[in-house]
Structures are given as C-alpha cells and as structure tokens.
Image (cartoon, rainbow, N blue to C red; front, side):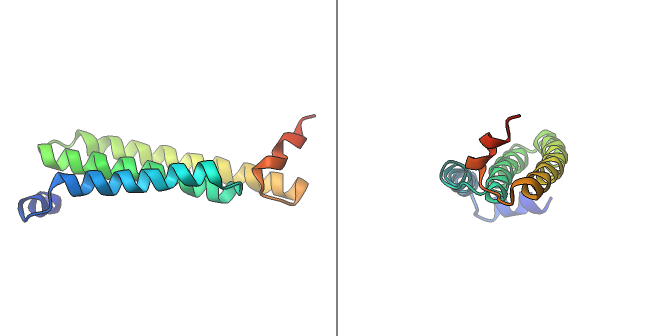
Length: 109
C-alpha cells in the first residue's frame, strides 16, 4: 500500500527500471571481474535483489501481488544459496587457505 502511494506521488516506474538495471549491471560486472569468492557471492545477491526490486515495482504498478509472492520465494532460494555457498567456501578455505576462485581448479582429485 505504501508503494502505491509512492507511484501516485510522482516516482514513475522508469526510476525503478533504471535503478534495477544499474544494480544488476554492477552485479554482473562484479562477477566477471572479481576473483574473490566472497565478492562473487555478494554480486550474485546484488543481481537477485535487483530483480526483486523490479518485480515488486511492477507488481505494485499493476496492482497485483504476484510479483511480491515470487520475491518471497527468490529470497528463500537466495538464503539457501548463501548458506551452501558460504559453507563450501569455508571448507575450501580450510584446505587451500585462499578465497581466489582461480585456484579452485587445483582441487580436482
């Protein structure tokens, strides 16, 4: 209900589209450039949150709650992804003492 009043008071859907696009591009650039596994996980979370922002904005703009329900499920999957990813990262760090993803190919047995 609060977002509906924001749309009526002058913030258009274009603002949310541009903001979500900028956040998603920052996440993609971070995934492609950085080699630290923790930063890669943060960039993936940033991309998921950009999509969530856009879904909530469109859901509110069109007056339906379907997008907000999808956002809830995406957040649950993102939490599970972060848990599994961080646990794998901790175990890898214990073995090789680095979080650089370029060295993970040496873990082949």
